Amino acid sequence: MKLKRNERVGALIKILSDHPNEIFTLSYFTNRFNAAKSTISEDIVVAKKMMEDLKLGKIETIAGAAGGVKYIPITSRENNRAVLEGICRKLEEPNRIVPGTFLYMADIIYNPTLVRKMGEIFASQFAGETLDYVVTVETKGIPIALMTANALNLPLIILRRDSKVTEGSTVSINYVSGSTGKIQTMSISKRAIKNGANVIIIDDFMKAGGTAKGMIDMMKEFEANVKGIGVMIATSEPEKKLVDHYIPLLILQNVDEKEGRIHVYPNESLI
Amino acid sequence: MKLKRNERVGALIKILSDHPNEIFTLSYFTNRFNAAKSTISEDIVVAKKMMEDLKLGKIETIAGAAGGVKYIPITSRENNRAVLEGICRKLEEPNRIVPGTFLYMADIIYNPTLVRKMGEIFASQFAGETLDYVVTVETKGIPIALMTANALNLPLIILRRDSKVTEGSTVSINYVSGSTGKIQTMSISKRAIKNGANVIIIDDFMKAGGTAKGMIDMMKEFEANVKGIGVMIATSEPEKKLVDHYIPLLILQNVDEKEGRIHVYPNESLI
Image 1 (cartoon, chains in turn yellow, blue):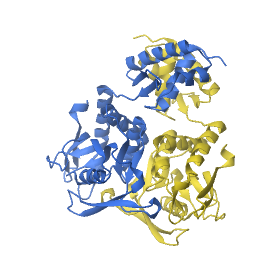
Image 2 (cartoon, each protein chain N blue to C red; image 1 turned 60 degrees about the horizontal axis):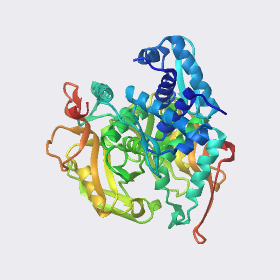
Image 3 (spheres, rainbow over the protein chains, first blue to last red; image 1 turned 180 degrees about the horizontal axis):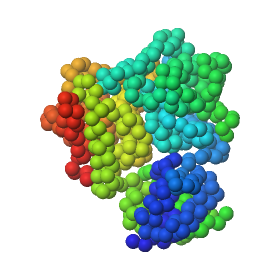
Image 4 (cartoon, chains in turn blue, green; image 1 turned 90 degrees about the vertical axis):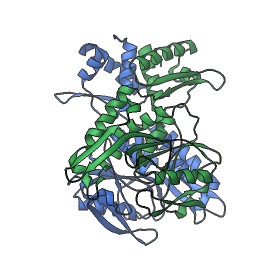
């Protein structure tokens, strides 16, 4: 079957954007589309320009023997503003406050469309790093971390709150929750992480930073380098967290249970 | 900015396939691409034919006031065979067996690319149903369930193994694990599921079916209709499970710890 240019460009974009950060050789497309290398190269030029003009992400060509073409989800500031302000409007709904000034967030952090968009924003922030894994701890951070890992084409590591028999031999650490002061445990199979890996940590919520600090300590057990930390929401208080560098998507300033008011805003440096 | 046809077709496919099962109006594209309705209609015809010819999924136009165009990820049998046989080859690696004849699977079930592909296969199987939620129980099934929910454009519901204070008032049930005979608990916030909803259940593993049965019981608390159950792996023994209808992607026939041999194959009806 011979395809026309508009069909080839469409198919090329579909295949690349279904596989973020995965390199496809030109031969893959010459075979699949039954077309010459020069033709595919021209298709790529068209696709590349259109994606940049419409701010739909980036198509990058890699030269050399291991070369080819890949799609990188890079989000624009306008996109980030629209996504993050939309989530703030949702978070500000007064009926989210549950006793103890907690916020009910399951409908947001388990919404595939929203977590995919948040994952792409994180992926854009860490796009320059050479990474081996995205790390999170169960449960609420898993969807956002998975979508970040998907956008970066990296395996996801899920630290467990208890050690499960089906994981083989495990490494466990204790850590102190910064907000409650309670001692908690996290575990991971010894074989899950190769030594000396480069990782980023993604989680849904940071108050004092105790959980993030626990994840950093766990990474030390594997001599891993933590290249970045991303959290969906960080509270503005305490200002001094147990970890130094982290990227929040949103800042939660205040939950006023009596007035039913929630004050949350996007991280200014992303929008 | 005026776009050429090949640019419009590429952009249209990118936008639609980034938002599976979400309806976009023609006006959305006439505005975004600065083009006439008739032009966009022709673009859609081109995109539709190409997607079907290359088996990249389906583009559907919906007539009427609430009408528009959407992308449905429909996987072909050839695709399913390639994906599922690939996963079988990985699962058969002898070093996966951990004491107790369990299989180490974290590198597969937390791999975004693989779970995305499995999610699309599940979504294809349940594409005909009118659904409100995808339901799973923490932890290992979450990635596959999230990618299924993403492909179907549905919210994900995660049942918890314990009730967390941040969820507000919860519904809890006890259930008996079919394989271990132990009593387990699962909980969910009362507000997470609207009454009388249509749901599908997705999980990573089914042996006797006790967990799936527990999830069905939990759905009864919300008068929800379970329209289908999908599991990544079902064991061939016991043949009679505690639930009647379920779709496994793979059948695990045997784990021979002594010989280091794992026998697993794709569900024949999907390939």
